[in-house]
Image 1 (cartoon, rainbow, N blue to C red):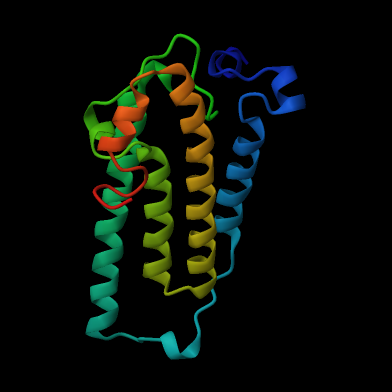
Image 2: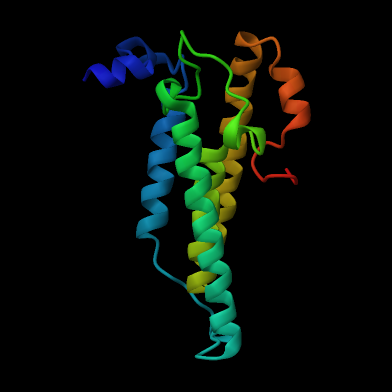
Length: 171
Protein backbone atom coordinates (compact mmCIF):
# COMPACT_ATOMS: atom_id res chain seq x y z
CA UNK A 1 0.00 0.00 0.00
CA UNK A 2 3.03 2.29 0.23
CA UNK A 3 2.93 2.93 -3.52
CA UNK A 4 -0.57 4.39 -3.24
CA UNK A 5 0.52 6.87 -0.58
CA UNK A 6 3.64 7.68 -2.63
CA UNK A 7 1.34 8.49 -5.56
CA UNK A 8 -0.62 10.87 -3.34
CA UNK A 9 -3.70 8.80 -2.47
CA UNK A 10 -5.12 9.57 0.97
CA UNK A 11 -8.33 8.73 2.84
CA UNK A 12 -9.27 12.39 2.84
CA UNK A 13 -8.64 12.62 -0.90
CA UNK A 14 -11.06 9.76 -1.55
CA UNK A 15 -13.66 11.64 0.48
CA UNK A 16 -13.29 15.05 -1.18
CA UNK A 17 -11.49 14.39 -4.51
CA UNK A 18 -8.76 16.84 -3.51
CA UNK A 19 -6.16 15.41 -5.90
CA UNK A 20 -8.44 14.08 -8.64
CA UNK A 21 -9.17 10.65 -7.17
CA UNK A 22 -12.59 10.54 -8.85
CA UNK A 23 -10.93 11.14 -12.23
CA UNK A 24 -8.90 7.96 -11.66
CA UNK A 25 -12.05 5.96 -10.84
CA UNK A 26 -13.87 7.25 -13.92
CA UNK A 27 -10.82 6.55 -16.07
CA UNK A 28 -10.68 2.95 -14.87
CA UNK A 29 -14.41 2.52 -15.51
CA UNK A 30 -14.09 3.92 -19.04
CA UNK A 31 -11.17 1.64 -19.90
CA UNK A 32 -12.90 -1.46 -18.52
CA UNK A 33 -16.09 -0.43 -20.30
CA UNK A 34 -14.21 -0.05 -23.58
CA UNK A 35 -12.67 -3.50 -23.20
CA UNK A 36 -16.03 -5.13 -22.43
CA UNK A 37 -17.98 -3.16 -25.03
CA UNK A 38 -19.55 -5.40 -27.68
CA UNK A 39 -18.48 -4.81 -31.26
CA UNK A 40 -21.21 -3.25 -33.35
CA UNK A 41 -20.39 -3.26 -37.04
CA UNK A 42 -23.18 -2.00 -39.31
CA UNK A 43 -23.73 -4.19 -42.36
CA UNK A 44 -22.72 -1.36 -44.68
CA UNK A 45 -19.30 -1.32 -42.95
CA UNK A 46 -18.61 -4.97 -43.68
CA UNK A 47 -15.59 -4.98 -45.99
CA UNK A 48 -15.22 -8.76 -45.97
CA UNK A 49 -11.72 -9.65 -47.10
CA UNK A 50 -10.71 -6.97 -49.54
CA UNK A 51 -7.71 -4.74 -50.04
CA UNK A 52 -9.50 -2.03 -48.06
CA UNK A 53 -9.73 -4.35 -45.06
CA UNK A 54 -6.01 -5.15 -45.16
CA UNK A 55 -5.19 -1.47 -45.59
CA UNK A 56 -7.29 -0.57 -42.54
CA UNK A 57 -5.57 -3.32 -40.54
CA UNK A 58 -2.19 -1.88 -41.53
CA UNK A 59 -3.30 1.59 -40.40
CA UNK A 60 -4.59 0.10 -37.14
CA UNK A 61 -1.30 -1.71 -36.55
CA UNK A 62 0.79 1.42 -37.18
CA UNK A 63 -1.47 3.41 -34.89
CA UNK A 64 -1.23 0.72 -32.18
CA UNK A 65 2.57 0.71 -32.36
CA UNK A 66 2.65 4.51 -32.16
CA UNK A 67 0.22 4.38 -29.24
CA UNK A 68 2.36 1.91 -27.34
CA UNK A 69 5.49 3.99 -27.94
CA UNK A 70 3.74 7.15 -26.67
CA UNK A 71 2.32 5.34 -23.65
CA UNK A 72 5.48 3.48 -22.59
CA UNK A 73 7.85 6.37 -23.34
CA UNK A 74 5.53 8.70 -21.39
CA UNK A 75 5.68 6.40 -18.37
CA UNK A 76 9.46 5.99 -18.62
CA UNK A 77 10.13 9.71 -19.08
CA UNK A 78 8.11 10.53 -15.95
CA UNK A 79 10.08 8.02 -13.91
CA UNK A 80 9.63 8.54 -10.17
CA UNK A 81 7.15 11.37 -10.80
CA UNK A 82 4.55 8.96 -12.19
CA UNK A 83 1.15 9.04 -10.52
CA UNK A 84 -2.30 8.09 -11.80
CA UNK A 85 -3.68 11.20 -10.11
CA UNK A 86 -3.92 14.39 -12.14
CA UNK A 87 -2.44 16.25 -9.16
CA UNK A 88 1.38 16.48 -9.41
CA UNK A 89 3.44 14.79 -6.72
CA UNK A 90 4.90 17.10 -4.09
CA UNK A 91 8.61 16.65 -4.87
CA UNK A 92 8.11 16.50 -8.65
CA UNK A 93 9.63 18.54 -11.41
CA UNK A 94 8.17 19.61 -14.74
CA UNK A 95 9.21 17.14 -17.45
CA UNK A 96 9.62 18.79 -20.86
CA UNK A 97 12.07 16.41 -22.51
CA UNK A 98 11.76 13.11 -24.34
CA UNK A 99 8.25 12.39 -25.56
CA UNK A 100 7.04 15.34 -23.46
CA UNK A 101 8.68 17.63 -26.01
CA UNK A 102 6.19 16.30 -28.60
CA UNK A 103 2.98 16.12 -26.55
CA UNK A 104 2.11 17.27 -23.03
CA UNK A 105 0.11 14.16 -22.09
CA UNK A 106 1.63 11.18 -23.94
CA UNK A 107 0.14 8.55 -21.62
CA UNK A 108 -3.36 9.89 -22.30
CA UNK A 109 -2.52 10.14 -26.00
CA UNK A 110 -1.39 6.53 -26.00
CA UNK A 111 -4.65 5.32 -24.46
CA UNK A 112 -6.71 7.34 -26.94
CA UNK A 113 -4.65 6.09 -29.89
CA UNK A 114 -4.88 2.43 -28.83
CA UNK A 115 -8.66 2.82 -28.52
CA UNK A 116 -8.80 4.34 -32.00
CA UNK A 117 -6.58 1.56 -33.32
CA UNK A 118 -8.94 -1.10 -31.97
CA UNK A 119 -11.89 0.80 -33.42
CA UNK A 120 -10.30 0.84 -36.87
CA UNK A 121 -9.24 -2.80 -36.64
CA UNK A 122 -12.74 -3.93 -35.73
CA UNK A 123 -14.72 -1.37 -37.78
CA UNK A 124 -16.82 -1.02 -34.64
CA UNK A 125 -19.28 1.84 -34.47
CA UNK A 126 -19.79 1.25 -30.73
CA UNK A 127 -16.05 1.55 -30.15
CA UNK A 128 -15.88 4.70 -32.27
CA UNK A 129 -18.43 6.32 -29.99
CA UNK A 130 -16.51 5.07 -26.94
CA UNK A 131 -13.24 6.43 -28.38
CA UNK A 132 -14.83 9.87 -28.76
CA UNK A 133 -15.98 9.66 -25.13
CA UNK A 134 -12.49 8.58 -24.02
CA UNK A 135 -10.96 11.49 -25.95
CA UNK A 136 -13.37 13.95 -24.33
CA UNK A 137 -12.65 12.46 -20.90
CA UNK A 138 -8.86 12.72 -21.26
CA UNK A 139 -9.15 16.24 -22.66
CA UNK A 140 -11.16 17.27 -19.58
CA UNK A 141 -8.80 15.41 -17.21
CA UNK A 142 -5.80 17.07 -18.88
CA UNK A 143 -7.44 20.49 -18.43
CA UNK A 144 -7.85 19.83 -14.70
CA UNK A 145 -4.30 18.53 -14.43
CA UNK A 146 -2.93 21.54 -16.28
CA UNK A 147 -4.59 23.89 -13.82
CA UNK A 148 -2.64 22.22 -11.00
CA UNK A 149 0.55 22.08 -13.08
CA UNK A 150 0.28 25.81 -13.85
CA UNK A 151 -0.09 26.55 -10.13
CA UNK A 152 2.95 24.46 -9.24
CA UNK A 153 5.29 25.28 -12.14
CA UNK A 154 5.57 28.92 -13.26
CA UNK A 155 7.04 27.92 -16.65
CA UNK A 156 4.15 25.56 -17.48
CA UNK A 157 2.33 28.31 -19.39
CA UNK A 158 5.26 28.74 -21.80
CA UNK A 159 5.55 24.97 -22.18
CA UNK A 160 1.84 24.63 -22.98
CA UNK A 161 2.17 27.29 -25.68
CA UNK A 162 4.98 25.36 -27.39
CA UNK A 163 3.79 21.74 -27.11
CA UNK A 164 0.39 20.34 -28.12
CA UNK A 165 -1.84 18.72 -25.50
CA UNK A 166 -2.96 15.30 -26.81
CA UNK A 167 -2.14 14.90 -30.51
CA UNK A 168 1.45 15.74 -31.50
CA UNK A 169 1.63 18.79 -33.80
CA UNK A 170 -2.22 19.05 -34.01
CA UNK A 171 -4.01 19.38 -30.67
